[in-house]
Each structure stands twice: as C-alpha cells, then as structure tokens.
Image 1 (cartoon, helix red, strand yellow):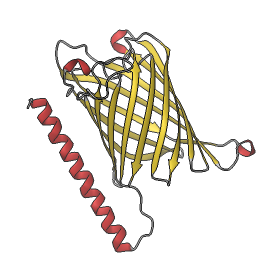
Image 2: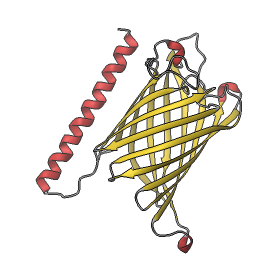
Image 3: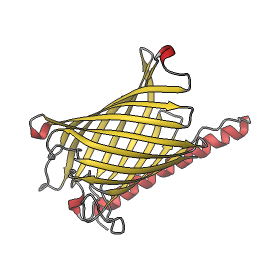
Length: 267
C-alpha cells in the first residue's frame, strides 16, 4: 500500500471513530433525560453523475458521502469517496469504477454575526486516485465559510413554502503532491436559492462562479438545478441538471454539462 493511501486511511478511521463515539455520547444523554426528540446523527448520500468535458475531479462518477452530525464546536465530519468511471466520457461505464481523490471535511459550529449564522469548515483532499489521471495528484487544503439566510415574501408566498439563500465561499490550494502536476489555487463561490414546500418537495438553484488564480484570475461558472422529494423526513431523492454558464473547460472545478440522480438518508 502506498504511504499516501495509508495515511489517508488512518485519518479517515480516526474521524469516523470520533464521530461514532460522539454519537454514542449523545444517544446516552437522550436516553438518560428521556428526550423524545432525537436529532439525526448521520447522513449517507449516494450520487451518480454523468459529466461531459469536466476537469479531472469533475467527470462521470459514482460518489458516496458520509456525514457525522455532532453537537460540539466541531459540528460536522464528512467523508467523500468518489469512484470515477473509466472511460471518463459522458456515458462512462458504471461497471468499471476506480478510486478518485478522497475528501474529508471538518465543519465548525456556526457563530452569529448580526443575527446571521456564519459557519466555517476546513476540507482536505488526498491524491488517492488510481490511476492518477483520474485525480489532481495534489494534496489540497480548502477553508470555507457559509451561511443560511431565510427569505420572506410576505403574503406573496404561501406559508407552506420555506425559502432560503445559502451562499458559500471556499479557497482551494495545493500544498504538496506530484511535482509534475499543475499547482491548484482557485476561489469557488456557491450562490444557492432553495425552496422547500409542504415539507415534502424541494427545488434548488445554484450558481458556482470560479476564480482560477493559476490562470491569472480567469473566471468560469456552472449553474445547477436540483429538484426532489423528501420521504418520511429521512429519505431524499432528487435529480440534478447542470451546465456551463461561462468560461473555458480549463477552469478548475467546472464542466460542460451534467446529469445526476441522487439519494440520501439521515438516521
């Protein structure tokens, strides 16, 4: 086993062990206090995305995401494991997957700034792709901040609707890895408008502009539309449609078109 892969596996196991231990503590407190309300502790998500003309991390793939939802200063531990297809064409081949670059995210409890919750996170990307062409070949560090702002339309929007604006900004830089691969340095924005109605259906519109500092500050962007169904409050299934808004296909974290089908469960 390669050293990088071994280190990655150790870090992942540590994070998962901490998450499970923390969840057990919360369960014990809930049982001791006789609390009837139990907040979800984990989210498991499965994505299948067909992508055309994407950068190495944005190709046709299947992806598994596991979130551990905690109650302390660290409020989130996330593990993302992509399995890009070979070939990497839009059609791909789901029966010939390979390991991509694994990501781990640590999220911190939001703080309030003028009554707006401001959350922060740190994301680490490991060059675990095999073969290496299916990843960036670099260790990456990505700090970011995000918030969630409710939007009210007064009487113009029925009470059954709940709308939010969810902006995010994330800086991605490479810190080590294959010296023959390109360095990474870009800023990513996500500007999301989400509408949930009857606590059963949701629609999400997201613009994702990118400033690629390795290309002199050139910009690109993709737009994504997602619509789905919430089943019994725990299960979600949804469809994603994405397309390039502007910029060339060399801009990091962009693609030409994408179709995805996704499902998640919380427990």
